[in-house]
Image 1 (tube, rainbow, N blue to C red):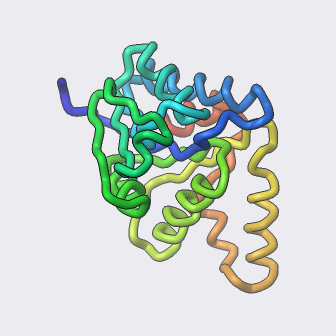
Image 2: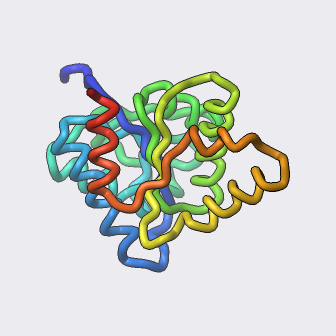
Image 3: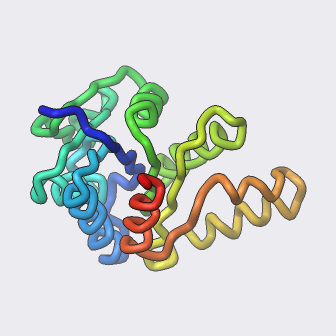
Length: 185
């Protein structure tokens, strides 16, 4: 298999969520990545919108890399039919491997784990440890409260307004695709 020229890390939920738009956008992202011939790097599970992204990417002939801690293999039904699978010892190692093997980060709807992943890569960016773009797909307004929280943090003096320069909140998959194409040049 040829080495991918561009890889996108997708952080997202291990549940499907309450709004069918979450699943629809997850599938659209997986398909879009495959059609652009970009590799999906994700949590290797086959559940929730995480599984939806991967199934869509695979169905469209996309290259995939899954990264999963050994203790989550049975819980998240880790896939073994991906382009590559990395089994880690810890959640932190999982994030580190996903990040290291990606050129851009995309955050889809998710829970505490997705928030953890977002804030870790955002903090690394704020500290100057990387310059990779971070895109937050605001499906059905899901992440609007997150944007409000970040504004609240800035308004109360716990972060500089430049924090908002380190990620971009996007309204739909078409805009995400356009941003990824723009960053590729």
